[in-house]
Length: 294
Image (cartoon, rainbow, N blue to C red; front, side, top):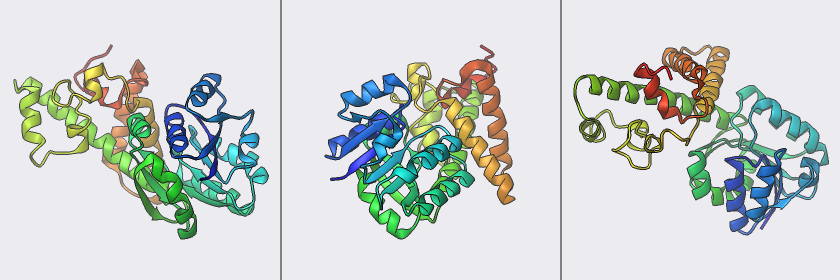
């Protein structure tokens, strides 16, 4: 069993850390929010006074933070203090360039590193069924895989440094686009007098089948576990979808890739967020497409 420093104990980080504790690891946690530390302590995490204090005796350092600037700030602060040979795993969703810089900081201090963003949301974090998309050397991935498994349903090695972030933003661009497509279809069905259940029964077993329909159906009823049945309580918040779509468009611009549907999805989620729905589940965009201005 390893000693693991976990920095960033929010809605995703806390249940992930809890699953590491359940697996028998010693988890040393730090977060800037006192309430998050209280929850972490209840899960068996040893709360530390600072990120540096958490890292100095850790075999593995996991970060789950809001953006690239936060990851780089933590790496710059703790990498010089880390245990020799420690493995750094960043599970934040950040821009590709920041991921590459984080790997460079780790390498400068003789540390192994992977970028390993996740898919599966808070439900997957609690259940230990997240998909990890890992980027880094074969050696670093081999060291990281057994650490990730207690939190994961699947761990995929996507390639070298930053490949995990590339896979994550491509996947979430698909998700954002597909949710808008599914929501548009239900809005059209309503106008045509077709019931939600009828459209679901056809599309879920036909060529329109996709995750946005069968797992996260944006109307209440057909999929009881979807956020639509809880007044669009997230789940995966619209603000996070917008963040990931913006990352996809930044990457597309830098790579010279044409992503017209990704660009349109970004604009639609920006408008949805601007209406005051940043904290709602991203599937709630169906209400925006209905013309609901509230």
